[in-house]
Length: 357
Image (cartoon, rainbow, N blue to C red; front, side):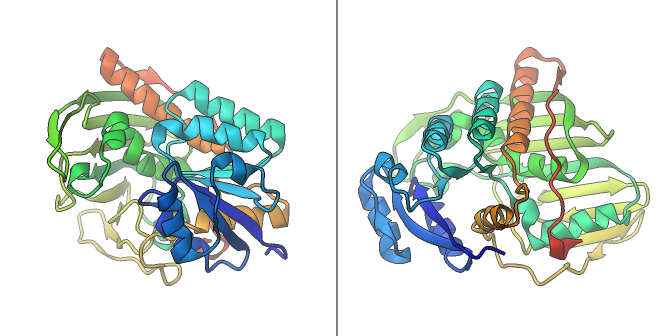
């Protein structure tokens, strides 16, 4: 473990900044230094609750030699520019997903981090959760036999029902916003994708915000894709901003020759994990250890701190995030062109947490 703390600053203080700051604070190898935002009052509210200082701008934060790593929580389309700025300033970066909205931008970020000798990590990292490590171990141990089919369901509801600024989410669509979660899980468990075939549609084009403001969407709010992995596993991914969380299709199902494994959420570290022998009833699978209740967002940053201290790669890499971006871009190309699209990139495979082996 680290002997010196990794000093962390947050850029972008929207809804997710609080959960990050809250879960960064307890890690002894991390120190939360402060935050900045284009709306400084949001940064002030964050540091009032979690400590640190308000930086007047990202430039001021990047100029501070006391900051080692930036957690980038800006809106989706801003990610490449912000990450580039941080890397050029000599700071390690952990970014919220997606890494970028194009393959070219994603790969440029990976190359820049490598050129600068800096760490680039990207969400989602929920495969580091206890439930996800549990089902991964069951897969590796062959409990379900060879897994040939995965069903991944992302029924993410109507963003305007809960988020004060739904526009950026609908601009990028459910695929890039939340489809990246199961895509990261399956590529972690089984390796890279090689081909996709997809269909997308705008189901509900005219929406109304919580404040009663009407808005229109053009990016498909419903996408389904068949993703063929290099190892032969086929993944059916469904993502949408229409069906609510009350929908009965949840999580991921892994169907193998001997039986099926199910995890109830792609993100909650305490999600239920169950196994059923072929033709029999599902029963709970014991966790590899007592799970964190919810999502420990700071775990991703702590893992980078440990990797730096131990002189090893970190598990969550920009290369895997760029591969997931390529899958998403291929899905978009496929539903636009009405034909299968190849995926070609690779990435260093993550490995299980020490306590998950």
